Image (cartoon, rainbow, N blue to C red):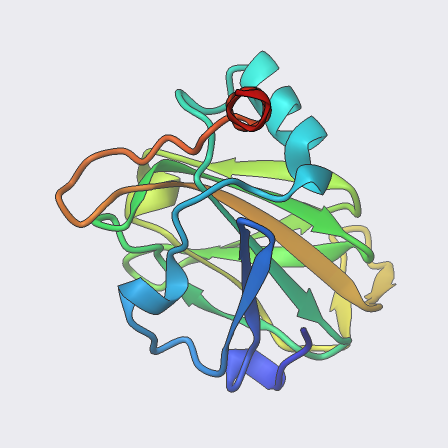
Amino acid sequence: MFGKKFTKDHGIHNLSEGFNIMVSSMMITREKLICLGELPEFSAFIVEGIMEQKLLPVEPGQLAINGYRPGEGLIPHIDKSQDYGDEVIGISLGSDIIMDLVGPKGEKIPILLPRRSLYILQGEARYVWKYGIPGRKTDKLKDGKILIQNTRAFLTYRIDITKDGQIHIPPKQTQKNENLES
């Protein structure tokens, strides 16, 4: 689950239908990255909260789990609009971290993501600004304090867009259980 600095050979795990896909590069095909199916049971309470709070218009069809050691980062990027819906939800676990939003003119806005926080990228933040995490072992906060990075993980929820441009709505656990009982 852990990769090299700035996602070179970075592992991405997409969990669906009880299996993992491990890829060795960010330069991968859509078919290798997207698994259309049910998200793992452990994420059900998170998805329920996302839907109860109306953070997404439909249930996410993808969960990517990325792990990072101190000093590892994520190259600033914009998620492909043809592959995913209008919102990206991230949950930061483990260590507090600074995420940078990088504007079209190269301007940077550092955002502190406390451990166990949730962020949503939508609108210009989703389609115009890149988001990334610098590969460093410490961050200096606005108040001058030094933030030492520890091992951290991100859960990223996205709405999948199928090849024909349709929103993929994953099967619900209750539908799966009803089908098993029939």
